[in-house]
Image (tube, rainbow, N blue to C red):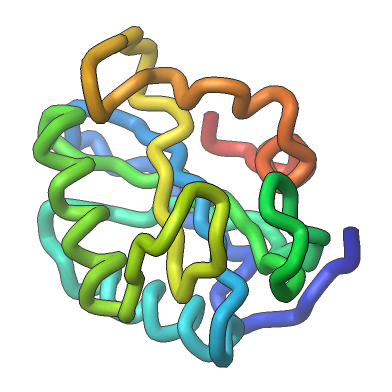
Length: 153
């Protein structure tokens, strides 16, 4: 893993009492100008009143897993606040991925932007299309290392 310097990563704000849930979201990508895309993502999230980013980790560059014939990934984690439920948040995150050019060709394949809900407050969910906490998060250095740097958990 290698640290990458990108604006907004890391950053930290105070928690806001106006939201019901604290959420940890994994951010990743390996196609195109990922650093620039991460900055645009943070600017995009700042304008969405349903979400509040309260902290971001440093960004790490690391090798792919699963399908290895692709570029290294850039990964970080965000702590966000929302009053949306888990399914509603997932729907928004999938929409944001699409806005930023995400096309799902195959599992573990290259992507412009990947947004995964890692934790949603203390909820445990096991439904088709949504498992919380995110399965095997604890096996991925791309999640564990940035997560270990956060303060607002």
